[in-house]
Image 1 (cartoon, helix red, strand yellow):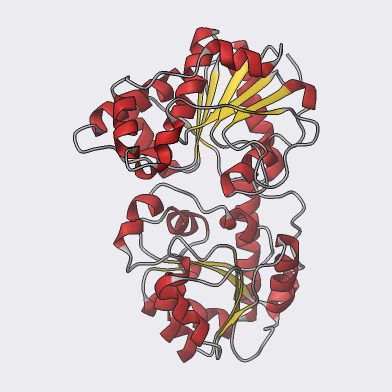
Image 2 (cartoon, rainbow, N blue to C red):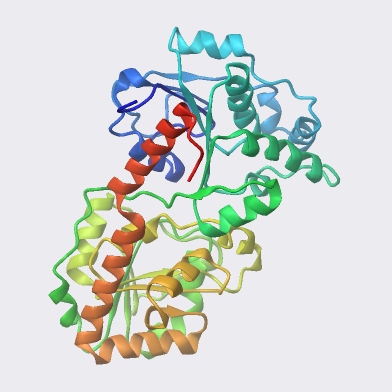
Length: 399
């Protein structure tokens, strides 16, 4: 078999440009011929841009009206013990309008939708590709005592899948231990349009005698708090942070009063943000929070989609935060201690060493770029994904 098989995406998250997970799917399927793909999802029309020419259909889920009511935990708990009916096969066939998929793809997000994908794939004896970005039980909590049942239902989906594509090594390990079967790692896929600046630019500071750090993206999920925790070091070393994104809320809103070292440029299109960072910054910074222990479940399994983008810019990539954060663990493996820090003292050392040595800045920019090409090359991620689809259809075992 050559090319793309016929794919039905049956998922809460469709390929779209308006959400982080949807954007990753959009990039995965960007080269899929429209006549080989159908999308059934909760968000139709999608948030942001859909894939051109691809039919999108709204898939209504069972008991959906309870999701935003005070009974939402009851609904999810009853689903865990099999009392919420699955979406009917006839309904899915009707929405597919004669399209005959060879494989079903689903993001493991929002249980009624991955239940629907499993029910349809199993009824039609089709292979299933499971994509795991986050641990759904953290976002859809059930009543106390129902978690074992919910995990058994999740294991049914995960174990049926022919390919299980997890966003990090840590996510794959958790799912292997929770569900009893192995998966594969598929890191977030960045845009192919990102280009690195010349490495020699790292030899000259943009704002001597101190560093300028760049940040782009959402300051939620503790990133704004992580910046705030390191603010004393930023000030002491004369470092400046240029950030692109919406204003931070909560405790991180205090950053707005640090105009001496924190320059918030607001939300701009990604390409504009990357061009400005390459022109004005000496390094990019991913700042996990250490103080918010509630972020640990997310940090210890997810993988930040901005890291593949950072690693494509041709700048040193600095990651700070707790040792259990997947992005920091990746940076320690791939970039070494010169660009990672778990406390203020280590962060000060990283900044001071980068300031003091032009040759080290250039070398670490090159190291960051090479690590990104090794792990996050978008064409390879897409090629591997298509290989998973074709292998599932042909019945080949996962590598």
